[in-house]
Amino acid sequence: MMASLSKPLWRSLFLVALCTVSLQTLAARDDDADDEMDEVTAEELQMQEIPVDERIFVETWNQVPYKKSYFTYTDQQIRDKWDYLMRGLKVPYPSAQYMSVQFEKYPFMKDGIDNWNGDYAELEKRYLAVWRMFFSGDFQKAREEGMKLGPMGEIPALFSQLMYAIYLTERQSIKYMMLQDVANRAEDYFDVMKEAEDDPEVAPIVASVKLGYAYAIARIAEESPVPIVVARRYIGKIKNSAEEVVEIMPEQPLAHAFRAGVDAGIMRRVGKFTGRMTYGARTTTVEESFSDALELAPDIPIVNYEYANALIYMNRKRDLNEAISYLEKAMKIRPEFSMDALDVMYSYKRLQEVRLYALNFRSFRKFEKLRRKFSKKTDRNLTSVLTDPLTMDMLNNPENYVLPERK
Image (cartoon, rainbow, N blue to C red; front, side, top):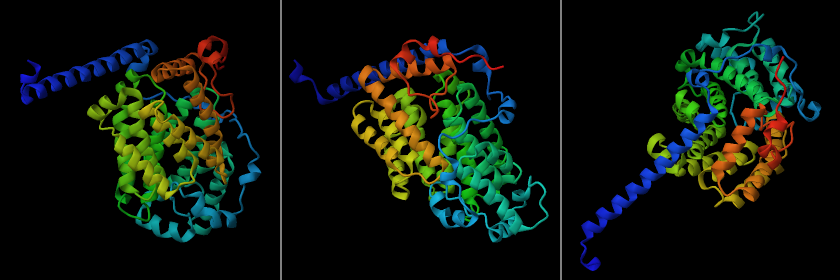
């Protein structure tokens, strides 16, 4: 009887079976989302933006765990090293000549500059002073001074805030507020920057501001429960911004890496099938975009460790050895400024987490769930390089690691 079944009937049976498996997969994802509802309050679901407590900017920030003198450069050294230091963002050197031309074309670039009398040579020195603070890791001062220098000054200011939020804050709640503030401030420039998107001389500045926005939102989303991610429409905001940045600045390695990381992050949260069908996240995009980023700048630590993360998010333990090799590669890159140094340090910490997962968990989702619950219960920022790597004791006994309430 089986031999007598026609090919069309076999094809129909196969499609029915495939649909059944797909529906079961979607149901499993829904169950995961329902399970994550236990981690969410009604207030969090109604919140579109995280409220920012301005005290976090006047409190004394933690210091970087290295000597700032390692990366403290003179004006001439910054000029000489600029192309290397900017190999990821491709931000143009803020010369007096560059500013005199671009500020006339785009008056919004002058807005918000404090105590400036029109002397571009003097302004160049002020910008270099802020970038010097960023390169060395004097993040709080870089933020304070950069905010006084308009849109171009806000790039080192907000990237200083990003670095501090991700790698140096002890508390997850402060990390989220700082990231939200970066997104808010960057978004304020979207309308006025639109006219400059197609100008190759200014496009890197536009792309960097948009990248800062999307990166901040993405770092909140990656550790938030799925119901919050959906309620706040994070995925659409992040994915659209990632595509925009690559379109505006295709020569920017961090833009390609970010776009790849976005698709991998979607698969991490909802799986490959739902990620592709619902959000257009594809493994081919991840592979091709990381390939582009690594070709443009193979020696950027964050590109290498994010590729390692992407391999785990897409394929779990199947490509674990390859993922570890990229984390180890990131750890071996010799940093020449603060961002690379902190990325290298975090690569080591992330490697310890990956090994913890590999040795103790069969289910990646269970590991992720416990990791997320630990941060929520303790308010500890797991990406901080100032604290110890995650352990099984931390995951099993989070009540022993709860931070005291802020005063």
